[in-house]
Image (cartoon, rainbow, N blue to C red):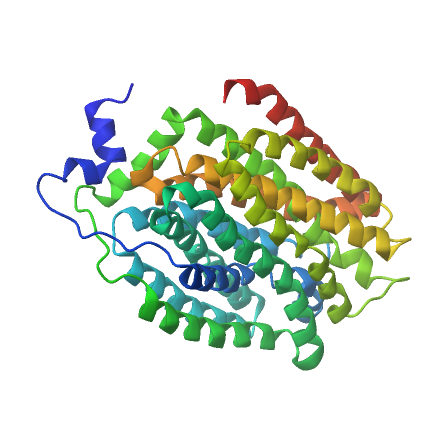
Length: 411
């Protein structure tokens, strides 16, 4: 049972409902949902551009291959900090201004990375990029609020499909631009596109969004912890997020290393093109949301986790068959995104007044998993080669499946 104090923290709009009347928020049209998806893809891509560029960054800034994964790790750690410190503000401040402000600051951070003269400046810029990329999650939470309750999973799936495409095409775009104009052009182009997107969102986001003065900032952060204490499904789905995105990061962070090394020696464009194979995951995202709307979230999760484990078998043969890699990438991304969308669809039903905080708490585990997978995979590649990386990924995937099987009856 929630105490009166806990209810006041978790449901601030209810505590002030008798004092002030908030204006209704318009429902989310499909065209605006698509703009949300594009904005999410553009924002989240900023933390993945570096993955196919690790060898180029290592060469320019004198970073060893065993340590270059720290660029991804630092970005993900700061992303986790942003999830905790910035995303909950969506339940307190005007989301229209919050989203636009974060995107404008992202323009500055991307510019710092693009013109970084030293390793220190590069890492500082990447840290800020990671911190501000959490605008993606503010957008996802906002979309779930604007959506019709009966179509929430469908809308979350559509918006999340933009996230998926952004993650995967980031590698393709980064590879092409790097081969054409160097790695710095990647972040400069992203800064320009982010600026245009900030202006577009200012024009379409609701202007009459209600805000709540019932919580102080420390109370807002405390309520994220309270949600974890009180909501079992949030804890379970957060652990699943940590494991599936650890597996996701194990593949995508280290993949550039065998593909760029002899005998394959692929170009950045060719390496980035493998992200196109994973776009199939975006198709699963929307479908998984619809299945969650129909009450089939647990079944979808179990099937997807089995597919995730099996995907490492063809991935194991990357150095011998690029076709096998493509097949494995499709299976892995389908599985990860299906579980991710299902997770979000389920936790958004827990506490309607705290969706930004639910998103923050859940995505912190996502970021921890991504950061852990990034640093673990590059070290494993140095010590045990590609076979070691695949064994690590399969082990994490098996752990996720076992965890789901143990907890599913009590969820």
